[in-house]
Image 1 (cartoon, one colour):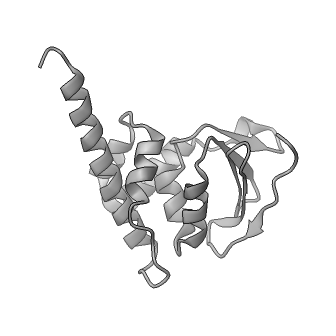
Image 2 (cartoon, rainbow, N blue to C red):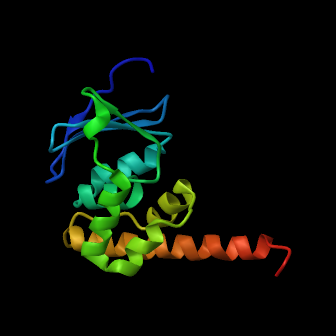
Amino acid sequence: MAGPIERKPVQSKAILSMGYDQIEQVLEIEFGTGRIYQYLDVPEELYAWILRAPGKGALFNRLVEGKFRFRRLGADTDDAVDLGEALRASLETATGKAAADEVGQAVEPRDVAAAAMQTPPSEDEGGDTADVLDLAAALRASLQAKAGDDEADDPKR
């Protein structure tokens, strides 16, 4: 990496600041806990979309968490939270167990991001719950499309 990523403060309950390295495609996020993570191979459009979203934390959970490789910066990572479990818990709370179970299925991160970015959020949309429900629907559609592709490629069918 060329150097430190400059982060911008954002208005979010969960995220303090965000930055992006266009050359390396690295999204860097400082969370409210003070922990800083870098997410690798994140499309620039996804970063821009999260910056515009009113519910940045919910959108991050839906589009980035558990979908991209990451590394924690700074302190020893032995006490790092299982981010996949945190996402599952968040989805269970917002949308019910069925959507959280779908997170465990294999899906290409760029497929999920592309499906969810078809309709960018507007500034006047209702809070995080609406964002989570919209993203859960996009994730569900992406998983169903992926399952359809897998069935079409299966010579046994």
